View: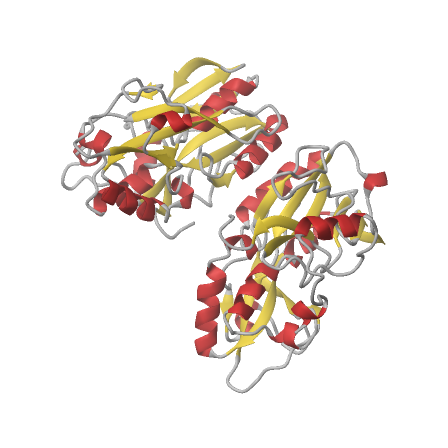
Length: 267
Length: 267
């Protein structure tokens, strides 16, 4: 199981220890399976004159964009999410976007942080996947060691200013009985995208072919399984790309903000 | 029971009908007890250059400031909350604040709406009070026909920009058994301030004398009852007063935004 393979006995790091490792350049890979039991988050950094519309966008679209925190203007330190948590240095990999185009991937953004930057930390699915696994349901793409399948739907997000676009969903295959359990379990994690947005016939949400995901890779279906779709944290990245702000910094996929907050019950 | 006295048989208005009555000047009084079963909200309107910090404040303080909606910049129409809902004309009474000082109360703000205004609609306690009454618990200040007791606590809100101040709470007396039920019931309404923030000894949250509320009037305690305290929608008004923006418009107490959203399950 991938969630566990990156850890070996005796080297389970606390979130703070992991962030210190990342900051010192000793951990540059995915945060999947790290600091289990703690919320991780997507990162979107925008200049202040773009940030109000993006805050409105997140308020209007809580399933793809559940807000864990917004930074003060110009301040990369987020004490509400963790001890000594600095968004300039504590993620293993960042993406830098200019006018909606990906320009670079870097391991630290201290030298390009601007005084007008506002950082948004948005819940991600790691927390509910941990709960699904702990409940014995399994998560197929984790079992298969992949990042899973994500699809662009025909469901429009609720526009705010220049921020608009289609909802992106992640998909996990389950039997009917397990789909019901998965709804119950993930519904308890509104800050990690919450309950699914659809199950069954993919064409009803504009997905033509499950074997050709728009992001990630296809996963195997077992007998009697149907696709179950959740709102996905890739949505804000697509929406920001559409809006073409002059500068935007996000996490690189899988290289998340690791918080001190427990996965369940903290929000 | 006050919630019902403003209605008589045959004149129960839908939220839309009530908003039309308000807009045409035929309903200028409280919205308490009106359009039962639908969410009502507090209103805070600020210029765009103050709105980002206030959005951050609300994100950081979801118990006193659960965000039902944020308007587009300059647009007083909020389709996500109701059909033909115009924030300039559809509240029975508004308060106009300049530099933190209350300057006027008016019934319509169409003539002073600005192109840079952003409106925030914040959940209010009417929804959970309706649920408490429907569960047989009763709400003392409604039984007594008053607006209830509100107190400034020593609990600091989480500051954002110029917005900061103490949490204001509303108080309702209950026995231990009913306090437990009240926690269960109101916990289901996170968009209406949710579960209480404290019960029992008021001095623990900096309230010296229950008989002298900072807002509203004292309510009667019956034998074996303790005070139960909820985060209150007066908090954002106090915080905005502290921040002293050049202009701010809010609802007048009890004269709320009436939405089409069902009280329970819609958010």
